[in-house]
Length: 342
Image (cartoon, rainbow, N blue to C red; front, side, top):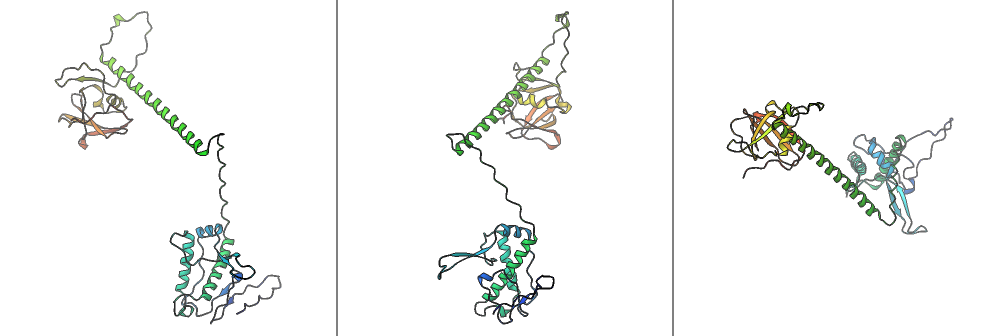
């Protein structure tokens, strides 16, 4: 049926907005060229309950502002045969992989369908009649456009950064590979320098410990004319390696991991002063005379425990009683950590 004419203009020059209501027996036909141009109210008795278009969530408006839904219509005959035209629409079916905003619109359509009375459904197929379907798509499209106009425009897309120019004679892939290789080489050089500085520190600390164990020179051997030099603070500990029978060992090079652990500040008092150990140190169950333990974790290795007895004798083990552990240390990697006894 033809659409009702527009109402006359008001004295102020504005058009009086009145809603058009379709016939109770048959909805108005909406041609493709008429989609979105006029709102059609549904007649009474069409719905079981009140239904109105919902408020569009922000993420739906943002998506539809940049991806307006359209339907492509291609003419099959006539003077415009083979030409395609895009008609604004609202999707009512989609796949599970469709964007979240499209799936929300399809869910809104199904909510609309549940409110319809049987008179709007095809008795044979149970589907919504095409006339009511097009009517609803038209109204929902008008509602969508009004929501988009009322919402702020989406932010403009970020401009992509200009690509880095490649040196002459090289492709972008070769340039990227060369840059990555140079960065890796720089990092490896820094790691090697840090490792060398760390082991120099360990060596100097071992020398300091050896000097504290050797007898000091007497004052008669010193040059009286030589100016006194300020003495360095004594080390917090001194190490002595002993043989299994208790006799002093001739080996004076102590494990670097042990020196590093004992040089850590704020250790318990029992791990300072004159300390002894039976070499070589291997992971074995603690003897019964161990009274205090510290937990050690060197980078890249499993944690183990360093214990001390009342006589300041050290031992190492893979496990320990929780009540004996008084401190936990996390230290840099060291290749000389003790191994399990075979």
